[in-house]
Amino acid sequence: MNATARSALKPVLIFTACYLAAAIAGAVVAGNREFIIYIGVMLVLVPSLYAVHRRYPLTNGLLWTFSLWGLLHMAGGLLPIPDGWLRHGSHAVLYSWWLIPGWLKYDQITHAYGFGITSWLCWHILKSALRSADGSPVRPTPGLMVLCVAAGMGFGAFNEVVEFTATRLLPDTNVGDYENTGWDLVANLAGSIIAVLIIRRGAKS
Amino acid sequence: MGGVAFEKPHRSAINFQHRTFVLWLAGIFGALTLALGIAPRHRQDWLLENALVLAALAVLYAIYRHMPFSRLSWSLVFAFLCLHELGAHYTYSEVPYDAWCEAVTGRTFNSLAGWDRNNFDRIIHLCYGLLLAYPIRELFFHLARARGFWSYFLPLDLTLSSSAFYEMIEWAAARVFGGELGVAYVGTQGDPWDAQKDMALAALGALASMLVTALVNWRFQRDFTREWTESLRIHPPP
Image (cartoon, rainbow over all chains, first blue to last red; front, side, top):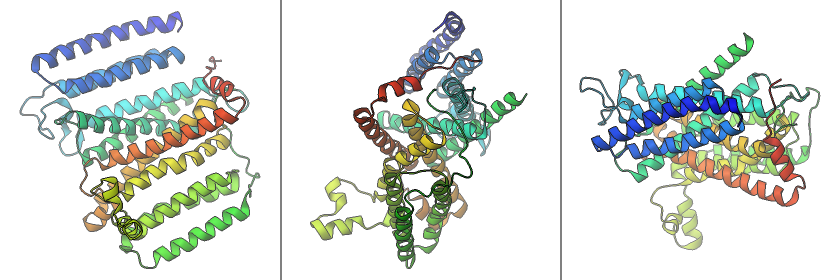
């Protein structure tokens, strides 16, 4: 990792460490055992991204959007919502909050955002690793963009499998059911498509 | 050159490799589909299950014309489609593999395996990854010239994402059609984690297939290590 990549990483790591520490402290005080899952996800996500950053230095934008995803994830699982807010299920946390009753939950927004930026990350890696047949840098062609959406969807599916494993380890989780999984997958797809549309638009301009 | 390089296949490069072999497989599959389509257990479910087969056949025809798929790949695709037709005929949750096993061994397969539900759908999801990851790898190999790490990772990722996409279609179809047909098509058999288990099994199958492929290539492909290392090299921005 070069000096530029290292210096870009420092503020993001400090910011991430701060909200993680606050989340752990809050969960311990509240006696929330589910935080183990959320911290577990972060313990996988942060070193994975660090490994990717070492090999394919990530842009500032990518680093911060991923850190923000971590924040949204921790807040979703651990921040309680007031009694008056409409929610799905018995857990009164942000993840259960209906932003548009019956249609859109905070959970789905986080899914769309998270797997949208995962598609962006895939594009970042692919454009660093690939070359066209004539040796020139690859462009965000429709074929490559489909591949990035597929990659985002693939990681989204992997996340669903991990969530399912979590339900085996902790009996009372706020992970969801068959219906919720369907909407999660739709949100992942929507986020990935929006991300590649932004990438294509950015490349044209 | 890095791990993957993208180029469009030449339009005139129509490929008829293994023509006789592919035609034989197509003939057998056509005959099997017709035979299993004569009196399926649930006609509407059979039609719904075969809608995706039609789409798959269109893709396979394009591959047949433009890409040199190996005999192994064609055989794997053929095997998967045959298994699917079996599921479509009986309806996935009602495939009588237990009765077949009992007729041969005297015990049901579920009692031997310790299962309490009809797991034919789960077996097919595992087979999806196990049988189709290799043809997908060949697809990336020829279409995108994927090499090294990418030629193993991309099929795994595509298997997972297409599996997720299929679960979405299944879920949407169940919502649209509802009732008995919706239940028959989804085949969750009351399991709220059906989608996750299906995707996990597909990924497991693909992982196993790619590991075996990598192991064989590591043993017999002379430049395996060099190709793997080269595929992970970063190209500096211009």
